[in-house]
Image (cartoon, rainbow, N blue to C red; front, side, top):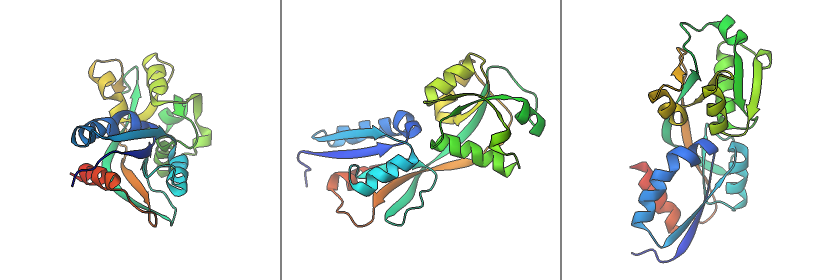
Length: 202
């Protein structure tokens, strides 16, 4: 059956909204041109709230959301990268403590992922030298390119800068993380939301 008019309201974290989701929304739009897609950006907590209160039908966030009313499932795997304007031969605890870090704001999925990495290495995030806290991936990347410090960002955000030599990927093993879709377990699902969900699975 044809989906006639309608709208699909989505919310996603900044990394997902800026890099991962748009090509998929372009495909969705070519299949269902009559569905107007509206995408809001919010951090993981904010995205969960919007799906809970119904202002967004689907959410996309980094990492798991602990909220019993929401169903979530993995839609992609993301690789994190440590980057800086200059090479570093090897990275150990001393290097991590001595470096100047450029980070995203508290509540961002990228910031939480970074703090998880530190915890696994037995480092308290509070001990780091944080030079700047910036509100977007692009701001963090640009500051790192300018030599203001080092940063951990999604590979999606830094791939191009690494390719053209503005940033170097530094040798630190970083875990993959999941991009998760969220929806309300009880609320009615529109066909548009189901269609997007099916498309993303493929």
